[in-house]
Length: 321
Image (cartoon, rainbow, N blue to C red):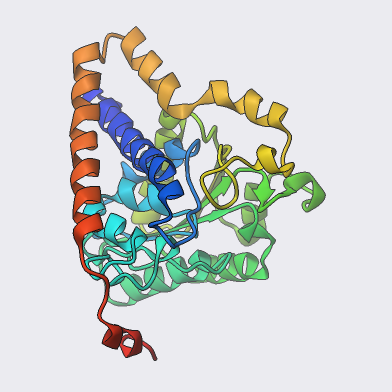
């Protein structure tokens, strides 16, 4: 694989789109117009950007309650997502799902389950369907270290390996299940080691280095797309904000501030900007242009969402099975 300047700039754009989108949520949330809980992805953008860069439009993505970066990285339209945050009829789930239930079938985002670990079997199921139908597409299941505590991970790994399913398992290990550190939960700290027990190849790479994610994901996606079966990726990273909401966990005594301070200098976005500028691949005008385009998309999406009508009362009884 060759990492061209065009690809580098697209990786940066994907990270910035996720970062600026969520910074807008942080700025607007105190107004209390968004009634949905939000689980922010700030600090973890390199994972979604690096993995998504290898995916095709028709590939499936299944995400978690912390889903914004995954869907934006896959190319989901922003306006329906913002409308969903405000509970409007124009929302991607008709205003009835909120932040944890984004969907954009046009780009393979079939819907998010807020159940911890729910994305894991959904990805395998979609991969099984694609294989049975002879379709040239793969499925990606994103999940966190907390979801790896669930038995469904081991069950799904076994089934996916047995059936050689075209599914990529991506574990974003940010070390916390809500506020419980991985040290208090796992006897073995490297989650990706579990894949070997099911004859699934795996890789561990820096989740704050978008080019490291891109390289590892490229090998993994090529393996899965070739028909060789599933692959497991683990990316250590760190979320800056609280488990839920725009605040920081350390402000509530849930995590030590010193730990956050250690991770802030490893910002995947700012460090990549510095790297590209140092290599002569990005100048101030180009960076300003990328940000301006994203800012315009954000402002248009927010303006449309705030003026959109809420769902009709009759919608309460629709789409319920």
